[in-house]
Amino acid sequence: NAGVTQTPKFQVLKTGQSMTLQCAQDMNHNSMYWYRQDPGMGLRLIYYSASEGTTDKGEVPNGYNVSRLNKREFSLRLESAAPSQTSVYFCASKRGTANEQFFGPGTRLTVL
Amino acid sequence: GQQVMQIPQYQHVQEGEDFTTYCNSSTTLSNIQWYKQRPGGHPVFLIQLVKSGEVKKQKRLTFQFGEAKKNSSLHITATQTTDVGTYFCAGPLNSGNTPLVFGKGTRLSVIA
Image (cartoon, rainbow over all chains, first blue to last red; front, side, top):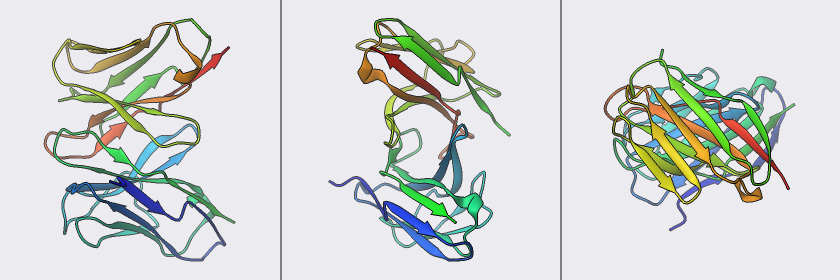
């Protein structure tokens, strides 16, 4: 099992460009999450999908959209990137209600 | 909304010294989880505590969940260089299958 995979690992964008961060898990987990991590700010939830077919906003959703394509895949889209979106983005998944989260390796995004 | 506070933000110790990080929630938690993130890596689940007053040990790591289920601590005995990283606590936003709220983490440096 690969666990949680994310692509790309690194990305540099110019202000105003768009891109999609991809996330996939092969553990048959129901719930998937997108976080951003900035120095001193911990992990902040952007969007999550409690189950296939549903998505909900987290703490910092502005400037992002998500798609739960199927049970395995959960993508995060930046429609018009801004320098404030420079961050490390982590995707995570978990099986059920009170279970551990499994994190992907992260995408390091720089917006110039 | 619910907040999870962690202290200290940083801790520098000599190898062999003990280390403790504390986590406090503004609301009662159904459970609390602890994660470790090595420098440049992704968060990895360490443990989950569910019962009031629960204490669990993993080798040199001791985890406690407060009687009121609003605070928790992680204590490392005789730190080693392999303990370097950031330790996060996290609690569910609400009951049921809801996202976790992460503390901002405690970054541990171990001086050999």
